[in-house]
Image 1 (cartoon, rainbow, N blue to C red):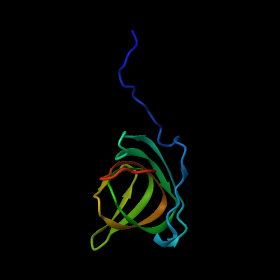
Image 2: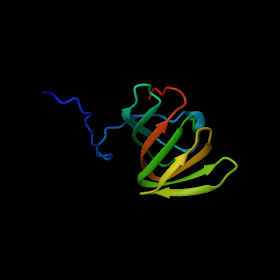
Image 3: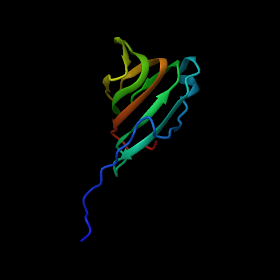
Length: 125
């Protein structure tokens, strides 16, 4: 008899191969931040996904078109919410960003994060 049970996948977030995910030039405020990432799991409807993302130092603007929860795996970043507080995050911090948030990221030390996204519409990353 063959099992039909779901299989668990285990990933080392530092061994995941990352592809270039350039930050749009019009969003970069300072430096030359270079981003890369990879999706490691996604729902059939493409609205929920998880993965690993990394970015080198620099400053850029970001608008969240989905709810995203991250765990900072390495590095240090300061995130300034539009009309809101500025907070610095580092290894071990877990942060939630709600859909619609506008923020400026200042990456001080190359940051690597694990992310989980829930989008109101399908996402093609």
